[in-house]
Length: 192
Image 1 (cartoon, helix red, strand yellow):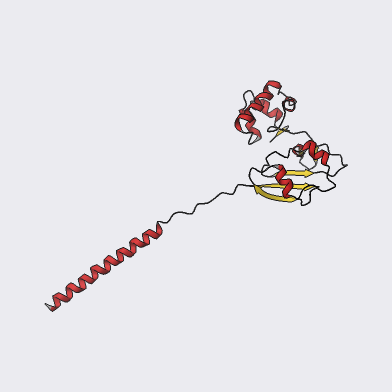
Image 2 (cartoon, one colour):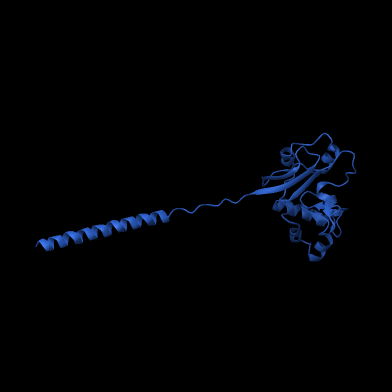
């Protein structure tokens, strides 16, 4: 009897230990079921501003900022900046794009190109080639493009108004009447 009683006690302890072990395993499972970490993607743009600003350099700014915000981040214009050129050629309300280059010229230099009109050739020299910004161009500017008349120019303006502007240059092919052939004629003369 004594042996049978001891056997029952040992068996009871074994069941109790096994039950405790199951409780520990279920608690471990609760830890494993924790919520995954959410990854927040960065929405920054890099903008290079040079020339006659107080603090030229490359700035990391929030997406959606305007050129005016970049000018403020760079400390504003120097006393030697060509302010007339800036007023005539820079749309300070324009949204900046990632990788954008802004150059503020020195007063008195031959400042004939707005910031969106700089193109570099294969040997990295600036060429005199006016780029029409699809997101800001007037009807007259669009009309000056080869193969684009006032009707097609208005379609481009209507498209950008309806769709919140062009995201890339090739998107202009989505405008009714602009196919691959016409795009090839204008692709080197347009930008965003």
